[in-house]
Length: 507
Image (cartoon, rainbow, N blue to C red; front, side):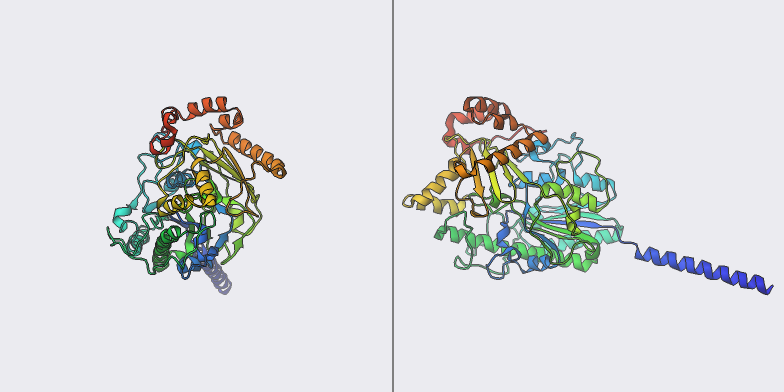
């Protein structure tokens, strides 16, 4: 009887130990990961303190987040226009493959799944604030929770972003579902905040106002009074962007989701002035890229070596969530870099086909980490480039060009380009000196041309046919018209080429 009692006690102790171990293990199981993707609109990377800006007190909230995150020094977008850039984020495809190479969408019948569709299939709740149309590249797709520009103080109210974020996260506390939450600031997109003009549509003033003397002028545009005036307004809007980001991160922290949410901060493209947005220069495509992945990234780490771009974000996020990709994507996961491991660093390719108005302006670029090669298929010496980003900066450049040959040459280059451009960004970071005819750069030029052709072939870019015969103007024009038939009529009056409108066909 005593022996049986001892056996029963041992069994009870063993069962208690197993139960305790099991419940402790359950408590230690990691929570399901969420994703918060925050995008700035038309932000130059160098405008942030964490990327070297000297403008006082410009981005304390973003800088604080950078101190908690992995910072990529060589982060890029692959198309420097808002809708195509955001289409890449959602589809994981280059615009020439998704069809989102202008302000248009994939058809609802397109079987390629958006990132959001994959996540919904895996039980994720999908929320979005701001830029809803541009961030939804497929017709008929509906978010679970969405507030657009008009419901966010014209996309310029930090307090409304805070309230809408709090509500979405509270709902997730209630239903227990993991989430993908895309928060899109409308700052610093035009119209910039001009202190002399009244606030409208519920917008809020930035927490600080800048004078023309306090700001920095990018080296790719001339330092003129009109340029400084406009850039002071731009920095006002950049400050409000930082205010908005701070309020969104406050809401995330208060929700308790911070410890199991991957947070990514990027811009959709460069600043909306000449030689940046809607082009393929480095200033067009470079982006701040900050990633905070709890338990994986190290706070304040800076990756200065590897080239990464937003074409790789779709597979990276699914990789982080342990979700298999079931379809063909144009990018590949850079999850190893987040964990501090090695990763093959590839070239960055970017493209433009259509901008906001005007004829097709197909451009392609290849960047190897030092040299940038650009192919402007639209440039023939007669077609004139213009876009809706020019404002006071372009007006100041046009006025100065009357008496300043250097500015005049810059304006002419902006308007008409050359079919090919080559820049050594190590010695010429603002891409001011085209090396396309430099005898000492012939080998590098050939290397980049070959690399671009390989990429175009690998990703089935229809512009490859034109690129192959670029030295045969008559044959190149024939193929150009086959790809962009609307250019036939527009070419009859090339000086107003920039004023028409012609989007590519939906895919």
